[in-house]
Amino acid sequence: MRGVKKKKHKRTGSGLTMQRTKDRKDKRPREKSSQRPRERRDVMFRLLILLALFSMAFYGISAKGTWLRHVEVSGAVIYTDDEIIALAGLDELDGLWTIAVPVETICESLEKIPLIERAEILYSGINSFKIKVTERRGVAAVNRGGFRLVFDRTGVLIDIMRPEEFCPVPEVSGVPPGLLKFGGKPLCMQGDAWRLPENSAPPGIMETQFDRLIQLRYFLDRYTPDRDGFLDLIFMDEEGNLTVEYQDCPPVLLGEFDSPEIQVRRLIAALNDEFLMNTERTRDIDLSSVLFPCYHVNDAYLTRDEQRLIDQLDEERETDERAESDGEAESVEGDSWEDADNDESGIIGERIFDLG
Image (cartoon, rainbow, N blue to C red; front, side, top):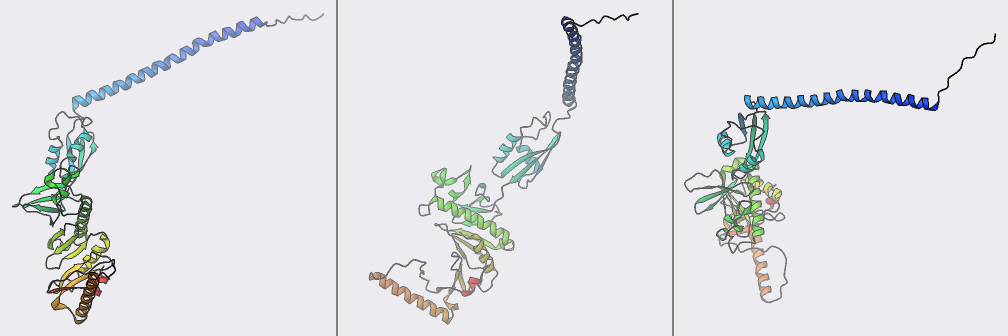
C-alpha cells in the first residue's frame, strides 16, 4: 500500500499578522499592570516621608525640643558673658527656635559696638550655640584736655576716659586727635573741630606716621615687655617723626620709622647698653638714619679726640657758610649738622654701628 501523505497546512501571511496582533494585545495589559504597583508604592513612600516630617515638627513644637535653651560666650574680657548675651538680644530665650535665630543680624549688631571688633556664632547643638567675640583692646591713648582718648591697634577710638580715671595704656604725645578713626573714617574728615594743625604735614603723611606709631607700640609691647612699665611716652612731632622716651634713659629718635625691623633691633640694643643709657653723658640717641646712627653727648664727657673732631666740623661748617655767602660754594646734597647748644655737642659714636 502506498503511504498516505498528510497534508501540511501553510501559514499564510494574514495568519501570521493575526497571531502577532494577538500577542501584542496580550502584552499591553501586562505592562500596565506592572507599572501601577510601582506608582502606588512611590506615592505611599512620599506620603510616609511627609507624615514623618510633620510628626517630627509637631513633636518639636509640642516637646520644645528645638527651642534655644543655652548660649555660650567665648573671647569676652571687657564684657561679661551675660552682657554679651544681652547685647545680642538673647537674654530671653522662651519660645525662640534655634533655627529661627537671625545669626548674621546678631553678628552685625555686635560688631557695631565700639569695643567689639568681630563676632561669630557657631551652633553647638540642636538647642544651643556659642557666641565667639574678638574685643578691641587699647594700645595707647591721646590726651586732649585731660581726657584720654584710647585707641586700638587699627587706630579706632574705642573709649574716652575722664581725668580722674586710671588709664591702663601708655599715652602718646603730639598725635592730633583727628587722626583717630570712628565709623571707618578719621575724625579729621568728619568735622572741622577735629582738623589737623595748620603747621603739620599733609594728612596722608600724618596718617602713615600714625600707623607706624601703632606699629612701634606693638613692637615695644612684644619685644620689651619688661620695660613696658618704664615707657614714659611715644612722641610724634608736627612732621610725623617719632621719639621714644623711657624712664632714666635718654630719648631715642626714630624719625620716620620707615625701617622698623632694623630700628627696633637697635633700640633694644641701646636700651641694654648702660654706657649709652647714661643720662649724664648721653643727651639723645639718634636712630632715625639706618646708614648713620649716632648719639649726642654733653660737653663735660667729650674726649680730646671727640672735641678735636667737633672743632674740625665747626671750622668746615663756617668755611661753607662763608663760601655760600660769597656765592662761590656749590650745593652739596646730604644731611647737615645742626647747631649744638652751648653746653651740648653731637658726635658720631663708633660703637653705635654695632647696635642690633
